Every structure is written in structure tokens, then in C-alpha cells.
Image 1 (cartoon, rainbow, N blue to C red):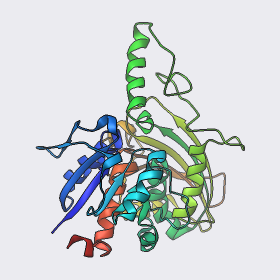
Image 2 (image 1 turned 45 degrees about the horizontal axis):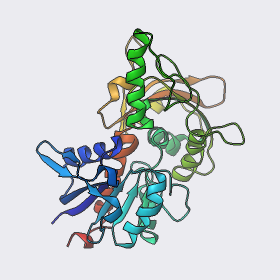
Image 3 (image 1 turned 90 degrees about the horizontal axis):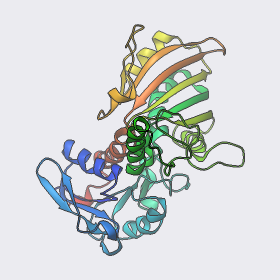
Image 4 (image 1 turned 30 degrees about the vertical axis):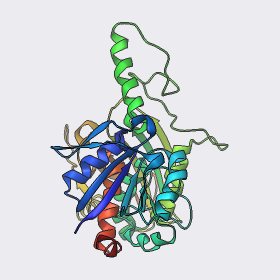
Length: 343
């Protein structure tokens, strides 16, 4: 017997990707519900190749009897309805920022810290990390295990899909508008995104960093190791899907390029594509629709002792959001944490 899964925020970019991922991975679901705000109630979304689901109203949806809730409706909405679902016995895997830094809620990337799921039952909620954090910690994990990372410097190149469907629509419309000299004022971004880069994602904080940069710092510490020092610069780029990251690390122990490459190749969830020739690396457009975190441009950083630099890319809607959430649910099943709920 399978599980009953409710996808909350089913009409958004991540919600649709969650439905797609559940179907593609043949998740053992006996029933799947598409749930969204009242304005989307009655709309239809696809689940797999043949099944169409009618969207149900989140305000009136009864979570009793549902085993898993995959949430991506926005932080303010999750703050209200995730605890309601959890109280009804539905295990919530929340993709928003609402619960990530709460100490009694696990923040999980299955390839990195599946052991953290042992604490989920305290509140029946599990947090999905930020997209940019997920792909970075997947790449850092095998290197940290072997060489003990002390410090991380990262610059991100984040696609507009991280800002949702509205961000993608604005890039599409403004790119076309450039060619007919009919640009309108940006609405989703602080500056024009077409043919541009914007070093600003989320709100500015008192120390001059943005909240997106802060997330990468604190989430990496919570997921991987509280002693790792992280400094991030996050940039929005005119790419529809796929985040790129230029990462430099300083380790406690000596590290060579060949040793790092071997550690990465043997780690789950990572694909190493690293040949020192034209095109011997992966770009965001090539990772769209793929599950892996791709690592390229592995090289020594001679400016620090035991330093290494690399480039990594991943589909931010898949591994950075939907896939990671589904993998958390799969891991719960593998660990036997949901065995009784299937009966």
C-alpha cells in the first residue's frame, strides 16, 4: 500500500515540478492532491503523462488522512497551514524559508545529512533548504569529509526562476522588448534583468549582505558544520533555469585536484564533468531538467594553504527545490519513519 501525498502550491513553478518529479520517480503514492490558494481552486494541473488533477482550496483542505505534504506556497502561507497540516498527522516537507532556522526543525539534504531526519517528529515538519545552498553543500560534503573545510567563498549566478514564474515572465518579455525598443519598468527585479546581472537577491541586511547571502551562510552551518566560515555574493543573471556557483574552499588538510575529483566522483548526487578544453564543463542551460549537481573547473587555489576552486551548476527547480523535497520523503520511507502511516 502506498502513501497519500498533498502538493501545496501546486500551481507555482516549484509545485508543478514537485508533481512532475513524483510521477517521474514513480513515488509510491496511492493518492495525490493538488492544493493551492482559493484563486487557483478548480484549475487543472498535470500529474504524469495522463492524469490531470483539479486544484483544491488550501483554506478548506483537510489534511487528516494525508501522509505527506510537499509545501511550496510562500513563507507566509506555510507559516499558517504547515502547522495545521502537521497537527493533522501529515508530515510536512516545506520548501519555503519559514522554518529553516528553527532549531527543532531539521534542515535536510539527503545526500548530506539524512541523520537529521531523526528529529522530525517533534513538530512533524521538515525544512527544505534554499536552492543555492542545496547544490553547494552537496558538492562540499565529500570534500569536507576527507579534507575538513575551514572556509568557503562563493559567488552565485542565479536564474530568474528562483523568483518564480513572474521572474521568468519578466525576463522573457523584457528580452523581446529590447529588440523593439519598448522596455517597461522592472517589476520583479530591482533593475533591468534582460542582458544584465543584478548583485541583489532578497532584502538587504544591516551588515550590507542580502538575505539570500545570509541564508547560504547559516544554512550551510546548520546542514554541514557550524564551524565552517562562509562568505557569499549572490547575483541574479538572465538565465531561465539553472544556478551556477563559483566556489573556493580552504581546507585543514592538504588537498590535490586529483584527490578532490575522485572524492566528488564517488559521492551521491554529483556528476563531475571536468576536462580542460573548450566546452569541458557544464553550464546552466545544460543542467536544466537534470537531477545531478554538476561539478567542473576543479583547480588548485594557490592563494591559500590547502585551497581549491570549482564551478558547480544545478537545476534550481529540481535539485534546488522539488527533487530534494521528494528525496526527503523517499528517505523517510527508507528509514521506516512512515511505515505505520502506509497501513
